[in-house]
Image (tube, rainbow, N blue to C red; front, side, top):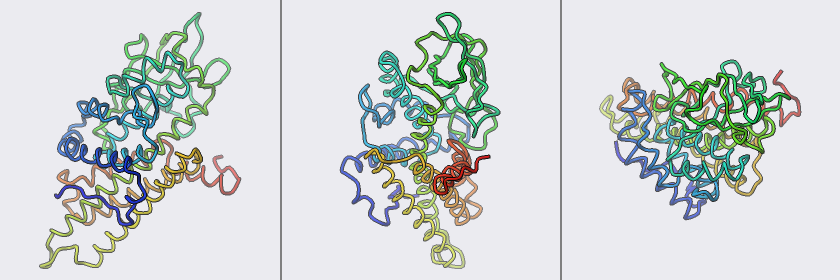
Length: 389
């Protein structure tokens, strides 16, 4: 298959700064050279390409939108374009970067003490330390306020008890940002280091999706952590939801990358696949699929670009982020399925990226707020009526 050329029908490149294009092109080249040749093997074997993490750190991908502490300090559009290209490689890599950056480094940066920031952010930016985010529980996903995990004071320490589930990076993380209820019912964030007594992890097996990613359970059994392990400014569930909003923004961009990869594959295949003595690209129904895919990708690009500009201006709302995440993931999944149809039976083979992206997006549609939950978030905003219960 020819090297990826991009899907810029409306010349969105002209709307980007030189720096934004440089970031996008640098990561695009890295994905082509370092990710594409190995990712199908990792997906097949169910392994995460951990050897790529230091390279991501060297290129400034980790905590890229944060300022200081050896972070790149890029704007939100450049950060989004970076995640677009990472997910064009695989959702597992974009998920790793999203969790490291938005769900672990961001809360330390935003809610942590100076000492916590100095200790963790520089090595995490370099990829020398890995983080995870523990919010979801076996019985509480869309309703995090019902969490069972508790943190109780014991002298000058905290004692954690509970379980977190579906935790990306969990089994390889050096530090976990864990959310728990304290005695008054308030939710606080805690930093739990790998190797702490009473803290264990168990990797999730048998996944058909996100196979090139580490997914784990976190278990806390009378896990004692020091007083300075609490994130001092993390007072309430709102803090955890702010982290999720950062991650959802990146997901909206990432979904574009998966859609672009599948469209590019289907277009190339349709030009070389001969049936009835002509390329299938010459048939009306194939062209209809390709036109629909490119049109939706273009709309996804423009949606995210405007959202990124609003975010850089400090004007983006969580409802706007919900719309972008909801729209782009659903459309990317539709594009994956249409691409598989164009490839026919070959579409199920891992010689092509289409089924891998489709399977990954089934998870992406659910995590960081399900498609349905984001529908209700937007619905409440436009009607003024809550429909959650």
